[in-house]
Image 1 (tube, rainbow, N blue to C red):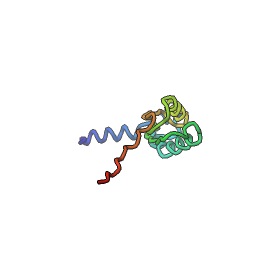
Image 2: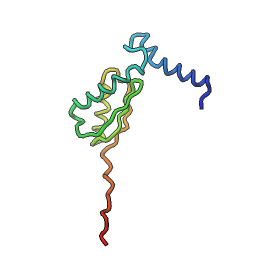
Image 3: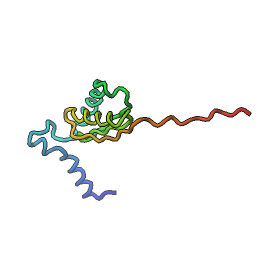
Image 4: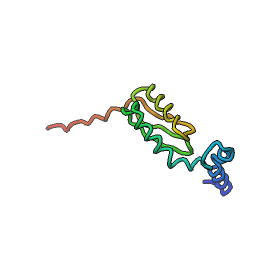
Length: 115
């Protein structure tokens, strides 16, 4: 549980995230959270249109202009290429790469035994 003072402090930090960037003209929106609704669809579109990542199973999460990549790629090199590509999308401040190479094989089911 948080005290009332801790809640106010956390709310202030959240509200101000990205504010100084906007005030000096480096950012087009006054708060980093305002980018969330538009960044993820643009990242998803970029990945689909690129072509190098058609054989992946990746999902994208984002908050405060930070994009997290999760899922499976075919090789470490493909994962790094995807991370670098997503970093080029407008307004993305950083990319967190949580990609895995390959996929876990499906669990084998034992067929029913005949008596």
